[in-house]
Length: 387
Image (cartoon, rainbow, N blue to C red; front, top):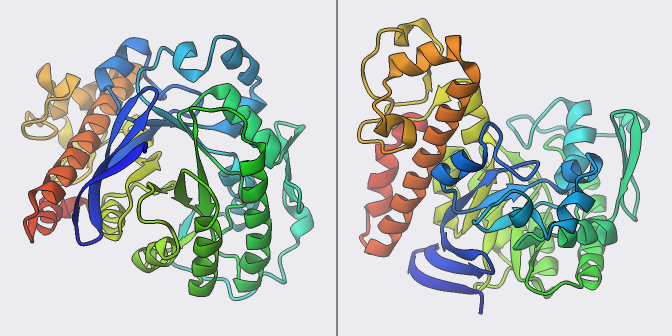
């Protein structure tokens, strides 16, 4: 058994996922390392950040021609000198982000629901989706991905946890579109299981269905009955329906296998997911926002480039032990660095936000393990300025 549940409090639980590259204590967070490494960090800084889990991008490694290079040296861990467990997504998110996401001009989460997509010209979609896979137009070239190719690429990359190829739908896709999309996603899931040849990698199936209860439950039941090692909750979410959609998506999945919430990492959503039984998360939020000068603190997210921080001698986060804060850098120092040495500022900000998220998840595990009735509630209140 590679996944062991340690403690439970309600639906929230702690556990351990055992991989060839170490254990992942859950709940936990996968920091995005699109091309194999966390953006802004080099080998030395990655070691300083010490992420417990990262996730790399199958599509982008494929279209940049890096897959063969990575395969030749024995996988992502050896190519980028990474010690922590690694996930790779399947390319399914890019079916949305490079296609309907661009057409609808929207991300995974929306407060607006489109009642009909019949007036949207699908011929304008730069991603051509068929029952067999998807063809992308990217940087003027055509790239095809299907279940078999996605699995082969992920096996070559050598990640510890890989995901089935799926279609991630848009928040603005209506019921009928999501219903038809499920047929493809379930078909592709079975093909991914058949295509997987390499041992030592865990393959996660993905539940889709948009914001629709019956479709989410149908997908959960269908994917849950397949012989996956774990499961991802993918697709789109309504802004006010996060908890319900997660609950529907988990409804048919085996209790004893790990559950991952794909592409979701806002603090509020993390607490919602943990309470529903999610074990791992991934999102660009902490590292992308760091590069733009947004530093995380329990007093709120600090846009450190603003003038009000020019003379602020306070720490970014009281008691923070990240590399930058431990060296004594104050808010004014970060502010100045973003003006005078942006590259260095981005590195230090990224290290800070990674440490902040790691600390949050350690506290979440501690709260669940304590067995105290209001432990998670109290912890969430500590982070109320970020919710």
